[in-house]
Image: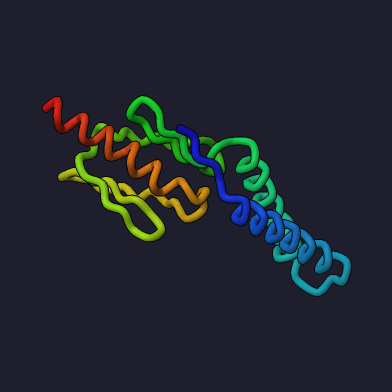
Length: 133
């Protein structure tokens, strides 16, 4: 299963990146800030727009073969769901845990249907693993 970023998150991210680059260019033109802040705003805006572009092209979360892939700025981070034995649903996240570790999966920036489908998919994997033990 693949879960994309929400349209509102991507729109907000696009506006934020444009504003950040605009602040950097405006400060360069007016020479109102130090060089660090001028180029810093342009750099941060570029990173934000790059993240926005990547979010439009690739899914935010991918659940397949007992592995959850979460998109980050430089690639995906893998989480083996089969290592965990409990899942908890919070307002902005899902928490999966076992005896030794705990992992939080942020879902507030994903599409509306994501929390329920992702919870059901992870819960199914955990329950199948418990049945086989």
